[in-house]
Length: 68
Image 1 (cartoon, one colour):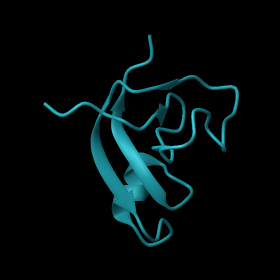
Image 2 (spheres, rainbow, N blue to C red):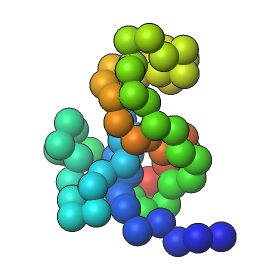
Image 3 (spheres, one colour):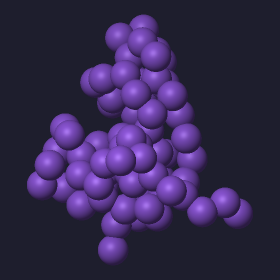
């Protein structure tokens, strides 16, 4: 299993850029390297996946995030 090198937000599940260690959308939320699953949303307004996950912006998302 590959080791994640990018953080994911514990609240909105967005995967952060490599240089970031804090979520730009929820700065008070914890971030973690302990995440799995990956989905890329290009057009959240038309995406059925984004609707099911209740996502309100385009981006890269982790499907499961574990914050300890």
